[in-house]
Amino acid sequence: MPNNNFENSFNNGIRYFKEKNFKKSEEEFNSVLKIYPNNIEALFYCGLMNFQNKNYSKSEIFLKKIIKIDYKNRNANVILGLICTNLNKKKDAITYFRVAYENNSNDIEVLNSLGSSYMSIEDFEKAKFFLNKAYNINNNFLPVCNNLGNFYLKQGEFLKAIEMYKKVLNIKPDYASGYNNLASAQSDLGNLEDAVKNYCKAAEIDPKNNTTKTNIIQILRYINPSNPEVNSLTDLNNKIKKIKIPSATEKISDQEVINFYKSCNELVNKYLKDYNFYDTQIWRSNTINLRCDRHFDVFNQFKIIPQYCFGCYKVQVELKSILDFLRLYFIFDNIDLAENNSRKCMIELRTIASGTYKGLIFCSGYESAKTAQSVLEKALNRNIKGKLKIEIKRGCTEYGIEHPNYKVLDETSNDFMKYNEEWKKKENIIDNNKSKYLRDLNAKRQTSLKGANLNDILIINNWIYYAKKIDDLDYKKLNEKVLKSDQIENEIIKQLDFRKKEFNKSFI
Image 1 (cartoon, rainbow, N blue to C red):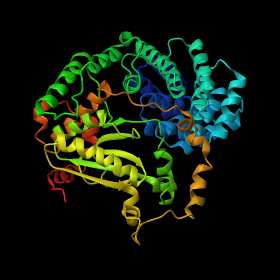
Image 2 (cartoon, helix red, strand yellow; image 1 turned 180 degrees about the horizontal axis):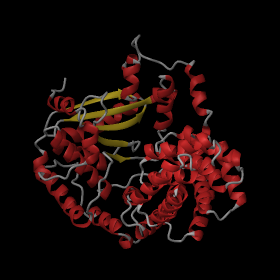
Image 3 (cartoon, helix red, strand yellow; image 1 turned 30 degrees about the vertical axis):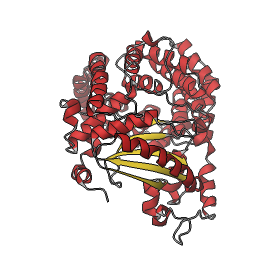
């Protein structure tokens, strides 16, 4: 009788699993496990269906029971590895994949998973070994070809990445991610026209994919496509670009600010629905690579300030109204700086930093900053109605908190901080991992186009929601019914009282 019950429940479990009726399938397999608690197949099916339902903790319970019975079980180790990957437990994932690899060193799926996992922890030498081994076994296996493309992209070998992504698309012509990846490599190579076309192809295949939408929106900061009607987003961006930003060479009235925003936002409301944009900073950048990610790696690991950052100064403006903040955005778009310095408008969301609305101009040296400040002050005096604060600062806020003397600007002061040459050894430790920075180093930098674009208007909507949250009532003049920004809500929820106080605080 138990054997009949076992066989019926087991077969029913498989049938329900194939029908994707996971609830009934798990009930049947649980009946099997009551009779034979160590039945590996039943345990695996229960683990697999919970994995597919993203119930990872429950899936692990079943799969780890298999591991206790059969430590080298390939399928259990692979799924456990995938669970760890999804939970960002990268090193644990590698441990499981390695067990499966030791069981069969030619298992192409395991080789691919190992290559991808080592790439995620920036061990590019091992990633290359496993991906190449998998590719030699089957050079038409799509996941391996795609991951090799990703590998070459991270290594800054853009032509090789493009070749591999094209192969991926030959294997699967309707693969949206393949077009996204191809476009990213073409963008890094400086081929923006082809990049736009391929991002748009990805959008044709998967029109609901927000990553693709974001990629299109962001690349349009640097290019006006030859065919702006190729995609609804490129067409919308083109419509917005026809709306002229008010000139900062003349005084900009509140009504001009309001009219500009409303004209742009009407287009967004008409042509772009159900999309959350997560950026909060508007840049006008030049082709100089500031390498901020590398510098913060140095700082975060050793709490030292990189040598490069001792020559980095910025002109910082703080404002008290969303309307004045938009005026600053207009100024930054039009300002004529001798070095065409990179600059950005940002809302303050860092818990360690004071203020609310800020503008920054990045300068290579104190004298350069003084020159930029002089040019900026003329435009500010002409256009900013409310209170403002403008000053020159050195490097990043985080550095000055850790090393207070770094904030001293007077080179004649005894407190003026100079670079500690002993720190070079620690910087070299970071730079020894050159592979991590090759994509950033080799990518062709682009200069921002002047004028409004879709990217800017979506960010301005986030700014207006921020204004609403901090009780800047000027937001009502722009958009009293501004849509909720998930990004702002998530960032500001734990610091709302602090940020409101910062908004209401007088400048010293």
